[in-house]
Image 1 (cartoon, rainbow, N blue to C red):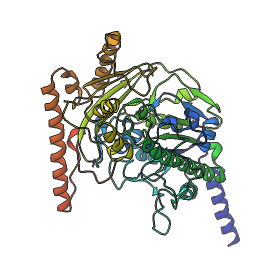
Image 2 (image 1 turned 30 degrees about the horizontal axis):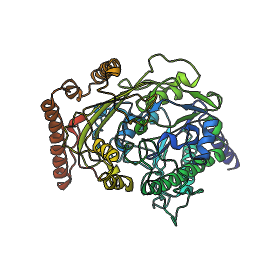
Image 3 (image 1 turned 45 degrees about the horizontal axis):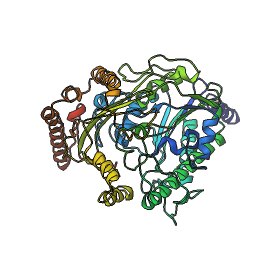
Length: 510
């Protein structure tokens, strides 16, 4: 009996010793609805918003030209973990695509022997539910759910994920998704406090907004929520440190898109997609390093993680690995990012496409006809309501409101000088060469990726043709949602299909 116990103890010791011995652990941390420049390491004008992320940045590499592909959550996160643009995965909005005809992060990492678990944003992070994650760390051992705004719950979830991976004798791949600063924002007296509360008189007002007491009040709640998100990052990293696995863990931090206020979230402007991407990989990434040259984007995450883990990437990918940049190498061709938006959580189609370089951002809005009104979650904010009030007497704000609500077909911004995208240069003769170049680059990206919106782009001088395209994709979306509701009423779910043909009525918010 003593001999048997010794064998069991030896086997356990070997299992623990071999825990991720041949490849790094992967810890993927996201925050929800946060602009890159809300982080100190990315130039935040407000001190003390992000001490834990700033520490992580000091210990790793910051990518100054990182962007997500999409300005809203569900499709943005599916680009991250599929390596495919929305029109190629089929996840163009807030609905499930079943069956998915492509490999996902879960499939790839589980197939390579990883223990793959998730906390938060579970339905948003895979093409359908339930998906084959090894564990949903949002659920406690007793079956109850962790509160999405509870800082310490992120410590518990991370610790539990690491322990379960260790028990399984596998390296871990944990996707820990922090709810903040997504609305509802922190408020005074909140039962889930932040370690620092900001006031309206101290917060910076983004250049794409306007200085007003109502705006400042909302921004104070937002920035306090950013600080609570940073508290959660600290809790996650504390769990990792306590596990003893920090030295063998590849940590990636980012936001899924910009702040949930007008001209950021649910858009493709610079501050809509610019994400504070940080990578820490002890012994492989030089602490305190920066990449301010190469454009990387969310579609590149899956192939990069595959290379980091030393496993073969799926054949069908739109993105390419940026792992060479982690060593400080050059990677030719990373001079632009292709950006895509299709619809909001209610299924309202307002397709936008964009291409951004170091100097310029070009956007096309084929839905813009002067009467159609853009529908977005940010219209429910105090800031938007104040815009509507002030527009009655303030011509400048009225002009901004009109742009937000109705847009124009083409927009061109010199983001090198105008990152807030305030001056549209599309009709300025001095920038006609840039406009032509960006049009060509966008057309090339759309053609290369099989984007169905190419037909609208090519018809950009024909309002009737663009409207026909928008009406067609909206009609297809509506029909698919009707079919999905009908199937659900019969206890069935036969939804699925490609890009435009697999829409369902959303049950979650932007």
